[in-house]
Image 1 (cartoon, helix red, strand yellow):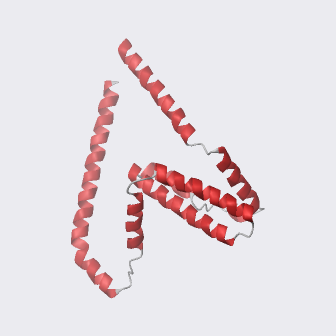
Image 2: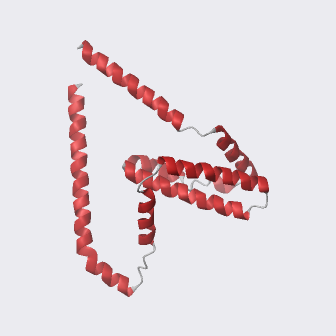
Image 3: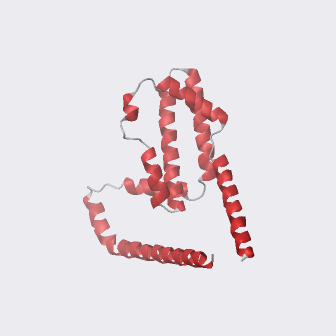
Length: 183
């Protein structure tokens, strides 16, 4: 009995420490924080459009954490980082103020490092596939016929993926249930 309490205490300390480490990693570097604040002062005056209950990126955060698995989260976050990069590149081109251009470049540099370090791997490749699929011309009759020709195979593949995902989910739930029962 004491061993179980000690094990629970040990895991509690581990989880608490991990939470602190994650929070520490999630903080914004001081020089980046300053650049962002200075850009806000430059670009955001008294803009009521900012508070119209229609955020650009924040609306995705809740869905990302709740509805998506880690690889999907990484892909979506990589796409968000890339979108920020395109926005800031455009702002940099449009800006007449050299200090603002430098701040925008500084922010972009941090975004690029973040994307390279935390979302490596297949995200860029998956994004390329997604962009290629989004570029398909659905009003092209040849594309429509080819899509119809390929549909059964694609449908079978999608069904197999769904079945694998359900099987993995059941396996994880069974593992969680066993862990809870053991405690």
